[in-house]
Each structure stands twice: as structure tokens, then as C-alpha cells.
Amino acid sequence: MSKVYLVGAGCGSLDLYTVKALELIQNADCLIYDRLVDPQVLTYTKPDCEQIYVGKQAGNHTLRQEEMNALLVEKAKVYETVVRLKGGDVYVFGRGGEEGLYLKDHGIDFEVVPGISSAIAGLAYAGIPITHRGISQGFHVYTAHSKDNTLSHMDFKTMLPDDQTYIFLMGLSQLPRIVEGLLTAGKASDTPIALISHASLPAQKTLVSTLAQVIADFNEHPLTSPVLIVVGKVVHLREKLNFFEKKPLFGRSVLVTKIGEEPSIISLTARENGAAVKEIQTGTITYLDQPLPDLKQYHWLIFTSRHGVHGLFKQLKKQKVDLRQLAGCKMMTIGQKTSDALWEYGFCSDWMPQSANSLAMNQEINEQLQGSQSLLLKGNHPTSLKGFTDQLQVYTNTVTAIESEETHYDYGCFSCASSVQRLHAATSIRFDCIISIGPKTSEAIRQCYPNTPIIEVRTTTKQAMVQAMLEDAQ
Image (cartoon, rainbow, N blue to C red; front, top):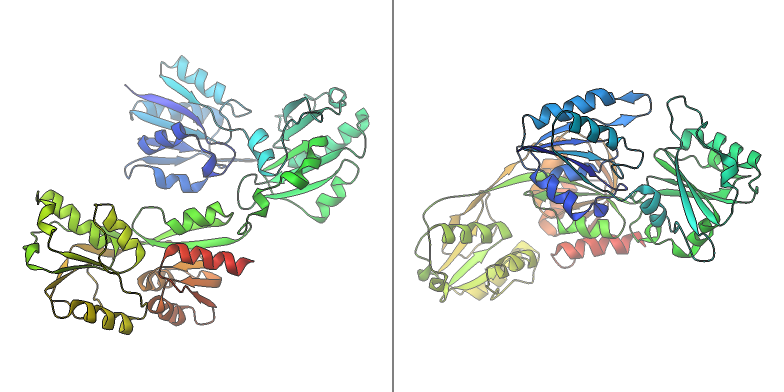
């Protein structure tokens, strides 16, 4: 039986989605989403999930609400699981109640999944608690958006108590009227006020002022929608409680290229440190289904990437090979990520070369192999490694379609030369600085981006790449 889930996407950041929201998104047959939803969430959907954008901006609605309601019913008759993903909380000025009633009237089963409202989370990310003992004993949340574009639904005289916090959502265009209404009602001119733009996102900006000065300050330092307006003494606490805007990579834009669909550890760690991160997949990994040689004949199995590890063990499992047959094989891995992948199957790397330079690495490998029987597990591209006895292709790395883009980023992160070449061929993206995982990647960067500074990490790990950004951003 089909069901429509009305899901709150929260304040903006993907980190603030509820566990249930993400589970539903991952299992959705159809995802209908708003403008204020983090685009990164689209990568969590199933490959065959239909994605429908119904974003709303002032004066520019992709769909009228009546059409939105009808769309939900239409898709519920086609799909088993339909997720209507709405910014903030479903029932906080989100018209979720109207959608729920329409579904009920048309006999469609539905469920509501609350989201964290920006009225609470947005303030917290700006270092402003919505209440605080001895300062604010309660809060009031208003929408500054109305059909007649007035504030007739607000009684500013009820907002005079200074032991309360007053929050106005969707209020940027109404800022002068809100300020005038409060001052005319008798609110003190030195009452603290904060404007929070793009709350909880790396683009967040916060302007702190007073009712008397805020219009002049805003004109000097304009902000873009969506903006939260907060009035009350709790604004003063921001000076000590602001944590988000003090993260080391806050305000920095980072592009991370990756091979395969799984999220990059670089992206996850950079976001945790406050960066605005975009991932671009430059390659698709396909594991090959083919007979394996008798592995007992080899003294060494050589893995140059985690994909080689996964490719071998997927085939071992499919062919029902007893892993005890590998007891006589030593495992050689290139890079820590490859070693980590090997450990997922319960095997430790017996040896890993220390050199990042291909010539020095080959010398190390030859000294280690000493002419013994060895098998290199590889992809479809030529390798610069030498000294192995046999090689077996266990996966392919094919070019992924990349949309043309002319954006500028503070940092670009490349962990292989092919990603450099593929991105450069498809886009006109510019970087202030590029982080490289090793010499071969750096050479490709110099060829494709000759005038861009390069930071090449000393250890070939993605954690080291993030650390390089952190040190450079200081």
C-alpha cells in the first residue's frame, strides 16, 4: 500500500536531518523537494528514484499549492513510497497541514516526520539560545510573510516584555516594518537584534545590532535570503556561545573529486570543520565478474587501491572460495586507504611502501618482492608499477559525465591524476589552491592548472589532505 511521508528537512544543514528522514529518503520511490533543501541529500536516493523540484521563492513558485497537493496524490497512485521533503518543520509555517488534509480527503495514507525548525536550530548555530535562565523565559515565533504583504497579523504591543525572545521567519523584506512596528509600540531602541542569513550552512552570516541601528547596519552589510530575525537580550550571549562561525574552515569553499559513489572522507571532515563542500564524481567503478587464478601459487598479492581489494574479495565470495586458501599469501598495499579496505575483510597489510615517488616506490617494491611470485590486482588503466609476476584486472574505472561549471573554489582536492584531467576537460572551474595526494597527481595539476598553487601532502592519506587545508587556512 502506498504512503506519502511529509518530512521536515530541518534548518538547512544535512547534518541536522533526523535519522528517520534520511532512512525515508534512501528508500523513497519518489522525492518531491523544496528550495531550502540541501542538494547533497539527493545523492542519498535510490538510482531509480524520481526527483521532483517544487521550490518556492518570493514571486516565483514552481508549483502553486493546489498543484502541489494534486501532485502528491498523483504520485501516491504510482509509487509505494513518496517523500515530500520540506524545509524546516512540516507544520511550522510550512503548509504541511494543508497537504495532509488534502491527502486525507483523497484517501491517501500519510505520515509526518518533524524537522528541526530554523527558529530553534538557526539561532543555536549563530550562538544565540532561544531561552536562557534569568534572561529569556519564553519565545514567540512569527511569520513575516503574508498574502497581503502586510504585518496586520502582528500585535507589536504584545512584544514589549524584555524577558522574552521574538523570532521572525521569512522576514528580510519586512525588516523596516518590523523595526518600525516594535519602536512605535514602545520597544527600547537599544534592544538587541540579530539577522541570521543561511543559518546552519557554511554560507551563514550574522549581523548583530540594535533596533535603532539595524537598518543602517544592514544597508552597509547586506544579507541574502533566507534570513532569521531575532529580537531580545539573548542576542548578547552570541559573543561567548558562537561556535559554528569559529570553525577553522568556516566560509571556505572546497571541491572534492572522487572515484565511485561513496562519500569522501575529505568531504566529511572538511564539512565538520565548517567548509562549504561540493563533491564531483569523476569516475564510476564497475567490478568484473570473471574466473580467478589459483591464488595459492602467489607469495604476494599487490593492491594499488581499495577498488582492487573490493574487486578481488567480491569475486572470492561469489565463487565461494574458502579464504583460508590465502593463508600462504602476503598482502602488499599502496596507501593507507587500501590497507583500511583490506582490513574490512579481516586481513592486515603485510607491507606498504613509504615512498610517494613512483621511481622510489618501484625500487622499494622490487627489494621486497625479490623475484617471488606476485599478482597485481588492478583496474583498466596502465600501471607504473614494476616487478610483479602477473596482473589481473578486477574492476574498471570509467569516466562519469560531469556538468560544465565555471565556479571558483578556495580549495580543490585531488587524490588521483585521472580526476584532475577529467575535471579540467569538462569544466572551467578555478581554484585559489589545490591539495594533491602525491607526485603523479601534482604533475597532472601542473599541466591542467599551471598557475594555481599546489600543496602536496607528505603522507599519501586523505586525512593528510584535510590537515593541509587546515594548516593553510590558519
